[in-house]
Structures are given as C-alpha cells and as structure tokens.
Image (tube, rainbow, N blue to C red; front, side, top):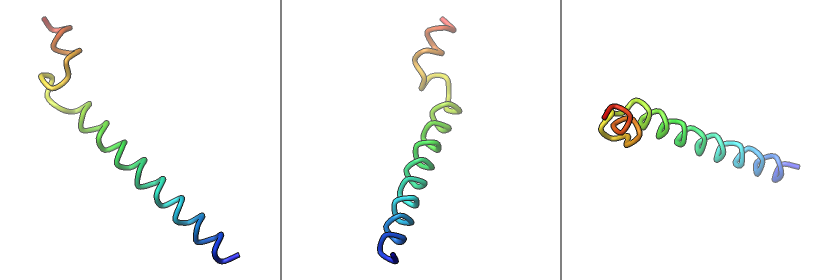
Length: 45
C-alpha cells in the first residue's frame, strides 16, 4: 500500500508541476508585449 501511495503522490506532484509551468508560460505569453504576439499586431495594422 505504501508503494502505490507514494507513486500516486509523485504522479500528482509531477502533474501539478507540469500544469504550473504551462500556466506560467501561457500567462507570460498573454501579458507579453504586443509585438511578441503576431495576431495582435496584425489586428492593429
């Protein structure tokens, strides 16, 4: 039982870390300067 419990905890931790990094990257991309995002510059032009 202990092994399965630790494996589940490790899986949850890994998924949380992955989700956190993806959310951080998405937030950085969204709040970045408009010149970085092509669609916004196209819309402005």
